[in-house]
Image (cartoon, rainbow, N blue to C red; front, side):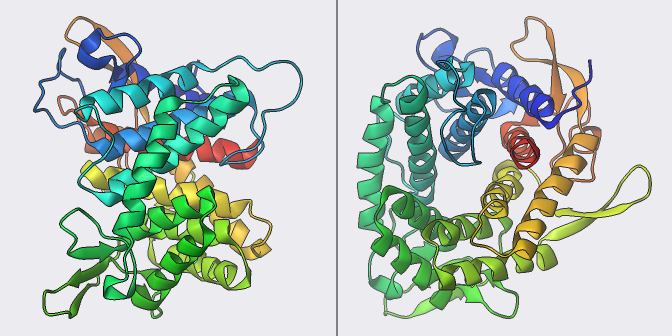
Length: 391
C-alpha cells in the first residue's frame, strides 16, 4: 500500500534509512548502532572507511523526530507526549540510545572531534534524545549527559574574543564561521547560557550578515598579522541554525532578525517546481549530494520551528510553513520504491529520494549508483516536518 499521509511517508523514509543504512558496529556488537554512508554498503566496514561524524549527529536527530511522531508530540522540537496511559518506548528511541554508543566506539572511544560544528550538531541532537528519554523511559542517557558536558566545554573553549567573537570552525583555530557559530549559539541558548548565545548571535549579525541579501555569509579567516579575510559564500544550511538561535532566544530584536531571514530565504534560496498538474510552487533549493545532501533539510528543520513560533508575524510563519510543505511535496513526488542490496545476501525494498526537490530518484541515483545517507536523511527529516506542521 502506498503511503498517503505525512506520518506514513515519514515512517517509510525512516524504515528505509534504518534498514538500508543502519547496522550494529561490525554487524554484531549488541547495544550499538551506526549508519553506513551509502547503500549498498560493505558487509563489514573497514576501520578506514568514511563514516561522517556529523551525518550520524543528524541521523540521531531524525530518530528523535520519529520518536516524537510515534508518541504524539506537542511541538517540532519538544513537548510532552499526549496524555493517556504510559507511553511505549519507540524503536527509534532505542536505536538513538544505541547510536550514541556506536558513535563513541566508531570515534575511537571519545566524542570530541577536530571540527567544532560537528561537535555542536551532536551536542544538539544528544540533548534532544536525553530530554525525550527522560519523558518516555524515565531514565537519562549517560552518553548524552557526557556529550553535553564534554562537547559543551569544547564549544565554550572555541568561542573566543579573537576576530571580535564567534566560534572557530576547527581545532586549527584560524577560521571562524557561521557553520560553527550558529549551532553553538543554539546549543548555548537551549542549555540556558543565554548571554553566551546572544553574544554569538550578535557577532554573526555584525560580522557575517549581508544586508543586501538578508543572509549570513560563510566566515572570516584570522590572519597571523591580526587582520581578517571575509569568505562571502552563502550556504543554504547556515541560515537554519541562525534562525533557530534567534527564535529560541526570542525578544523583539532577535525575532525581527528572524523574520528578515525567513523572507530572504524565500527570495534567494528557493527554486520553482512544476507539479504534475502544471502548478508552480516554490521549494527550498537543493544543494546536491555529499555533505551538501543535508543542507536543505537542516534549513527546513528550523523553518519548521519558526512556523509554529507565536512570537513571529503570521506572514513569516506562513512563509516558513509553505516552504517546508512544498519542499516535502516535491521530494515525495520524486521518490521511488525500489530494490537495493544492503549486504550482498538478498534484495530488500526501500524508498529512495532525490537530492533536490523537483527531481526524481532515478535522475540522481540511476540503477547501479550507490545511494548516499545524507540525502536520504534530508528527505526523512523534511517529511517529518511536513507531518509536524499538518497533524
